[in-house]
Image 1: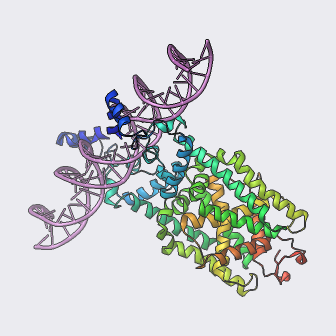
Image 2 (image 1 turned 120 degrees about the vertical axis):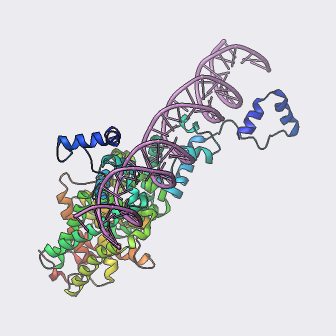
Image 3 (image 1 turned 180 degrees about the horizontal axis):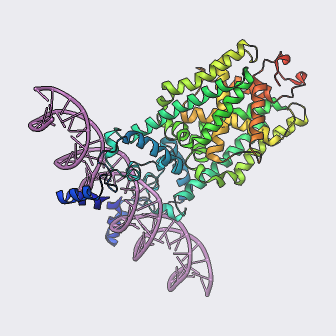
Length: 232
Length: 232
DNA sequence: TGTACATCAGTGAACGCGCGTTCACTGATGTAC
DNA sequence: TGTACATCAGTGAACGCGCGTTCACTGATGTAC
């Protein structure tokens, strides 16, 4: 990289030689990256996926993208700004995943909760990097305001609304829907976090565990005096 | 520190002068710390409490204990060994806290679960440092075998046993007690983790939230066909 | 259609920092005789 | 009761590393005229 650059800087001869070789100089990286901002977000994600949040360094990022160390500073004020952007993007995708699960499910509270719970755990497993940037200790812990951002609130309110609808249809016990949703959230979050960060996945298969968990959750949320409302 | 040491190294005169001044030289730290190993564990905990796991550095530790940077290496092979010891000690205290909660509770599954759930969340809140060393992303995530160690298994089996007893007394639905205990663990863990790392604590007071959560959990664990078994 | 010029998005060398760890050393302690 | 000596638990200087960030710079791009 250093070699080719100084090579090109050496004068007109080199430049014209390149043009003689081929109309599109192949081994020459363009001076402008084109979409470095998005590339930084993407590669940053990949880096976290591989090495965890603390493996994310601007130097490594620059080197992977064949760009100088200081190039990222044209797009992000500092490392924290980059991490913040990754976190924010994560919450956006997360909220979308939850909304999709809700919309794709059969009607009824139980089906929706099952779908959303599965989506939560699956999102965590499949987007470990985003999830770690969003909820990992050390980052959000030091920036709790991140949690209050629009996108994370949206994720949570999707769940609150589903709970509220469940209450209206008589499938969910009465009570502050925020507290009920919080418990659901915590339970599913606990499953995700223990699996991802600690490798805790009881039952050899794992799917049985998820099934039992959702069952207990649903059963606990049902109104205590209306057993006839129970679904399949 | 450097001054006083070189001062003492300068010869017999200084040494005798010290004795002439006072029988117990006051500003002189003893060469041997006495109990550096325990002091390292204690101060290490304090450091994590203040700055998170990544704020734990051997240099800072040495400086806080008025000891050289390399002194810790007399007691721990490296930084990881120290963190491992902190983690291990955490699991030991954690298991004790759970066992105490179980033993201190009124008889019956519901009372025990309430006590243990509360103990779990409280341990996390009051021993943030231990908790972070035990479950924080970035550490245990990279050393999953830590989780399988004797003390962490002990914590979990305390819960499994309580569930099993609950099943025998008819307070808990049938099914693999390990899966049931895992769900309880996950739910309570989720509450703890969201509170500690993300600052998520719904309901202004928080105690109401804990109460609702335990209620849902208990209700979900009850055998579905025996409503008469419900407790207060 | 050209051209001067402002602006944007890169470069690469360097700074300063804090870290884990090593190493030859030395003072303190305990123990065999 | 003394004394030689092994062992233990410290010291402090140094090494090498990777990091975030800054800075003067330069090539590329777009835009007004």
